[in-house]
Amino acid sequence: MISCGKGQLAVTKSEDSVFCLRFDPVSDRESEARIGRAEVVRTLIRSWAKMQDGVEQRGTFDTLVKGLDSERLSGRKLFPEELRGRSW
Image (tube, rainbow, N blue to C red; front, top):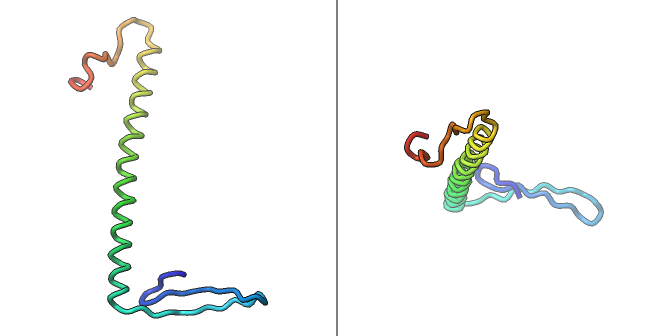
């Protein structure tokens, strides 16, 4: 089923391989409920995307810091652990 405006489109296939397209209208109340549920789902997915992005960026940053500090010719680190949260 595919939601379409004020109804749903349904495609069915019979035993003899004939496809039928059917439009089932829905009431305004059902339509508003679907829109509300769709908005809740969109909001949830956006929050997951934001959360995942932050976690992924933190992991990328930590990997970058370790890589930069391990490739230094001197023993002095660019990102000393004791300054984490204060200067970087």
